[in-house]
Length: 152
Image (cartoon, rainbow, N blue to C red; front, side, top):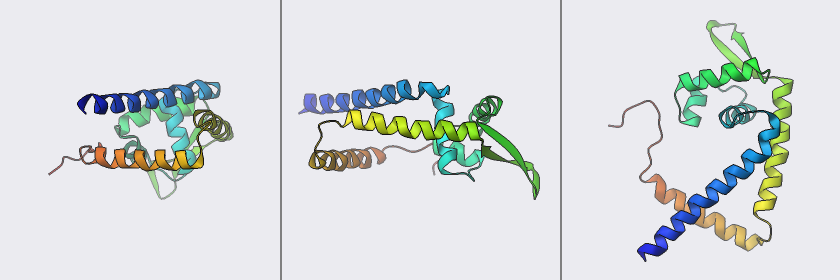
């Protein structure tokens, strides 16, 4: 039983690596580093997202997000605009170049998803979805996301 559990967790870990590598290989055409790409995709889905919110979603420090945003801005994928009500705050806006990278990425994601699930029936995918959801729920019992706050 112990060996079977190890094999399952190892297969899960390897499948995660295959998915990541497949996605990274495909989105390389956008010219973005993986962390920059993730931020851009989040901004595409959440246009009013603050730097602090981004950090929370990515489970990294706001300083790390600031570095990535600076690189995205320098490369022309985003712009920062001052908030009229508070000059200390900046609103991050995805540029036309950034929107095109997001559009291409969505196409690439669909291609990778189709390739990875080739030959899976609807029933297979439903079973896999259900099992992975249960695995995640079990894992979340032990996992505490990084929020910058100490647990009590």
